[in-house]
Image (cartoon, rainbow, N blue to C red; front, side, top):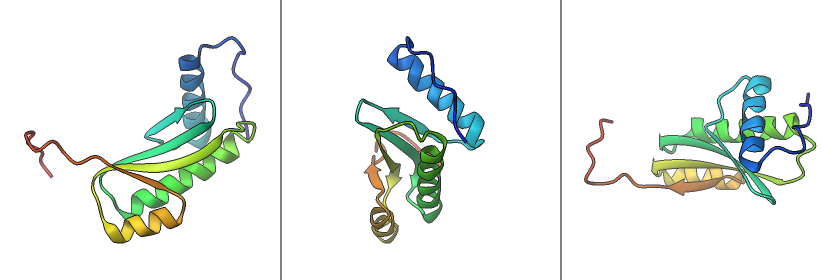
Length: 113
């Protein structure tokens, strides 16, 4: 499994778009976000509440990305962006090498849960 290499003269933002769209086509899954710099590729899952499903998705997408892009020599990391923490799930996620980005909701905004 793999992709044709993107054209060499693509701008950085176009390369990210190319890789993201290609990943969606090949993996046929929905990765919430792929963020890259010269050293790392981040696979990010977003949820309102940290939960076991998010942990499984982040691990799965990280592994599928690595299988799909073996020529990407950047460090591939995965994380979950969420508003509400669950300490027990966090411990499991961190034991699996995931990073949790806790972004509490804005208290002035109304949110239907």
